[in-house]
Length: 623
Image (cartoon, rainbow, N blue to C red; front, side, top):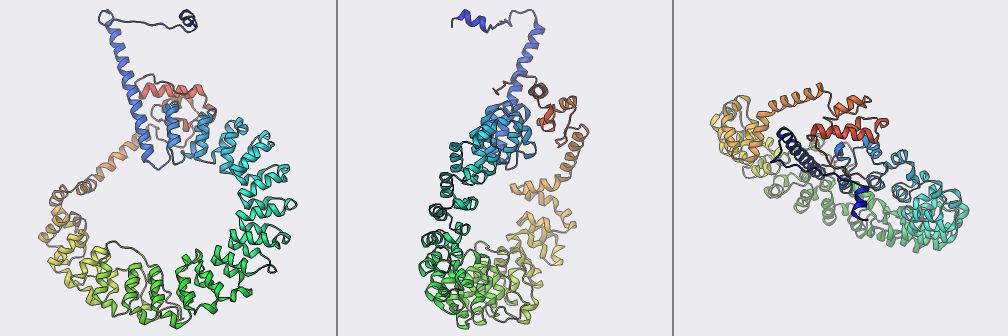
C-alpha cells in the first residue's frame, strides 16, 4: 500500500507549535500545564500499579483490582498468573462480568477457584461449549460436566478426554456412555472407585480386576460371583490390605492374609474370628508392618519380641492413642527397662503409668523429660530432688512441650493403669511451673533457679520469699528478663535505686513496675529505650497510642460523613456512583450488574482519571 492510499484511509493531522516565537503566551502556559499534569498523572498511575503488585506479593488476604487498572489487561493477567489466593469472593461475579468475553482471563480465574464456573456460564453461556473451559472445570469438579453443552456431552471423543482429566466424571455421563465398555475400562483404570457407579450388568472379570488393581476396596462393590475369584481377591488385598474384609472365608488362605498384612498391618483385626489370628508368626508380621499393640491377639501381648515390635511400629490409628502401654498385662514386661524407654521416648508423661521402680530409674526419667518436660511430675521423690535431673531439664537449649502429652486419670481405680497416691490424687495436671515439680531444696537452689527461669518464665513464681528479698540474686534474674521485677519483695518494689538499676539492666522491666515508680522513672526509661531499636518502637507505641487512636477516629468520622467508605451497599443512583468514583477505586463493587455496561464503566474510569490523575489520558490496554 503506497503512502497516498494510507493517508486517505487513516489521515493524521500534526500541529507544530514554536513556543519561542508564539504570541499566545496564555495558551502556551495552559498547554505546558496540561503536559505537566499528563506526566504527573501517568507517573502516579505507574507508581500505584507498582505498589499494588508489591502489596499483592506480600499480602495473604484477598485483593481488589482498582477500576482504572481493570483496563490494563497485562496488569490483570500478571496478578492472576501469580496469585496464590482467591479474588475477593463477594465481588467475583462483577469482576468476571467485566471480562466475560476474555477467555484467557476467564481460564485464569477458573484455576483460582473452582466455584467460579457457575458464575462464568451464568454471565456468558457460550463457554458451555468451550472444551478448554469445560475440561478445566471438570478437572476441579466432575459434576460440572452436566453443565456442558449437549454437543460435548454427546461426543465420545470429548468424553474420553474428560475421563483422562477426571475419571469421576463418569458419574455425570449420559446413560448411553455409562454402558460403553471402552469408557468403563478407561475410567476404572484411572480410578477404581468409579466402579461404584458402573451398572452391575456391565461387570466383567477384566473390568473388576482393573478396578481393584488401583483401588482394592472396589472389591466391596461387586457381587459374590467376583469376590470368589481368587485372582481378583488377591489383586485387591495387594493393592489395599483392608480389602480383606470383602474376601469370602472359603477362599481365604495364608497367602492372602500375608499380603493383606504386608500392605496394612493394622488389618489383622479383620481376621480375628479366623484361625489365622491365632498364629504367632502372623501377629509378629502384623507388628512389623505397623499394627500397634491394641490390634495384636491378647495371647501374644506377653511375648516380648512382639510387644517390642508393636510399640516401635504404631499404626496411624494408634498415633492419637498414647495409652498403649496399659495394654501390657504382664508385670515383668511392664517393668522391662527396654520397653519403658521406648514408651517414654514416644510419650514422656506415660511415665506416670509405670511402676515405682521405673519411675525411680534415672535413665528412663531423663528420656521421659527429654520427650516432654512435664514428665518430671511423675518421677520418684528421690529423682525430683536430684540436681543432675534438674540441670538436665533446664539446660536444654529449646523447650519442647508446653503441655503434657498424656494426662493420667486420677479418678480411675485400676492400679495397673494409674498411680493413685493421695498426693497425686489431689494434684491437678496443668501447665504448672516446671520448677514446682521439684523438691523444696531444688526450688531454693541459687544455681538452678536462673536456669529454670530462663527455660520457663513461670518458674519465677516458685522462688521462695527469702530469695525475693535478695537484691543481687533478683538483679541476676532481671538481666535474664525484665519480668522478674514483678516478683521482687514489697520492699524492693519501693526501692527507687533498685528499680532504676533494673530498668538500666533491661528496659522491659519498666512494664512491671508499680504506677508510682513508673511515673518517677519514665525519663530514665525513655533514655534506656533510645539505646535499643525495639525499645524505641515500644516507647512510641505506649506514649503515642492515644494520639494515634484520636487521629484514626477523626479520619473515620470524615470518611463516614462523606459517605465514601468501602461497603457492601449496592447503589443504583448513577449520579451518586459517579461522585463516589472520585474516592472509591473499586466502586464497581457497589454497582448493580444492570448498570455495568461498557459505556458506564468507561465513564467511571474517566472520572477517576480526571479526579485522581490530573485528567491525564492513560492508555487503554484492553483489546
